[in-house]
Image (tube, rainbow, N blue to C red):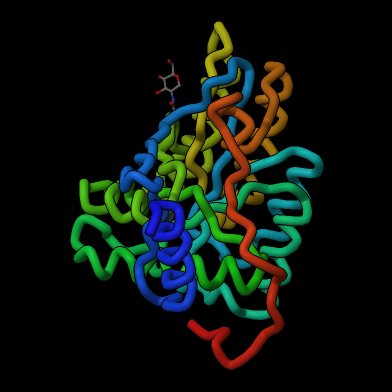
Length: 258
Ligand SMILES: *[C@@H]1O[C@H](CO)[C@@H](O)[C@H](O)[C@H]1NC(C)=O
Ligand SMILES: [Zn+2]
């Protein structure tokens, strides 16, 4: 049997056993390593990233963003369940509006404390949710707390992820540093010369970030002639479509539970 036959047999077996870890490696057995990025590459571009949703404010974020693009790193079972009817509707709306959606793990776990199998489970459950809701498999990931041990990188590589994201700036909302601190992060960025790119960590789960900091951020950044884009765009030719197409979005059934 030739390599190509073995490879396609492996693909068939992997798709039959959907709960099993899937290896997406080249025919010669090498796996392209997942890369970690902590900033954009394109000058004058800023990537606003929103973690920890769905949390009920997606509609507000979308409304405030208008035509601008942002990135959302989603959990399955954090403050809310990803399968709640309203959350499914909002995630589909984010996708339809051209937002980039990535995985942030199922329960916002400390990955440094998980076993290899638990990591696969965290990622697999999110992939199932993306598949059911959007018909897509995410290829972008952000590690909760930025915890990225070697085992996580290996698991991400084995599951075919393309990129793991950190950030260049943090609005400090998860540390409860307050609205003024968050606004100052954006003020400082808009005053930075020359216009270095930024990849900014926000949390979709903080109402004041969504309702107070975000409108201010957009105004400041655009006054400084920054363009607000998603992470795949601000990486220029290093970016790629952040998903793998796996089928049509599915209808709700008894498996849509957290
Ligand atoms: C903004 O810049 C000022 C002046 O450099 C600095 O003192 C302040 O700590 C910065 N604030 C934030 C939130 O980064
Ligand atoms: Zn998080």
